[in-house]
Length: 96
Image (cartoon, rainbow, N blue to C red; front, side, top):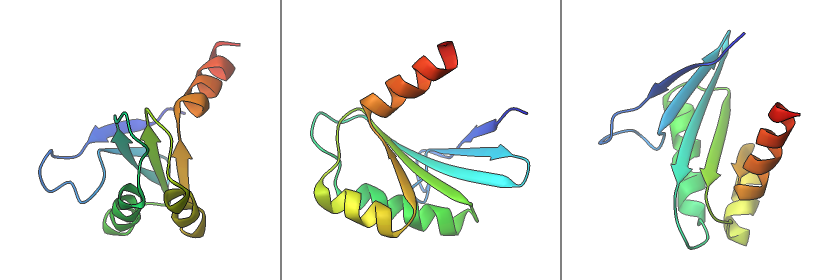
């Protein structure tokens, strides 16, 4: 099985940049390309997007790290936080 990937519109995306679908699973993804740490605002937005799009899973992907507040909020809302090390680990697993 493969994921079906669609982009949301640039304006009015309700906090999600991508929507991934595989079978009955729907995942919303927000992507942050920042040099500073990602705050809990990104987590708040993806939590809203998860509900808006009726998703079963939510992920924030960032080129940097996350604030303690963002990590705590993500844990309490079942949001996955992916940073550079997570992405490298996933790519390595795929390539091995």
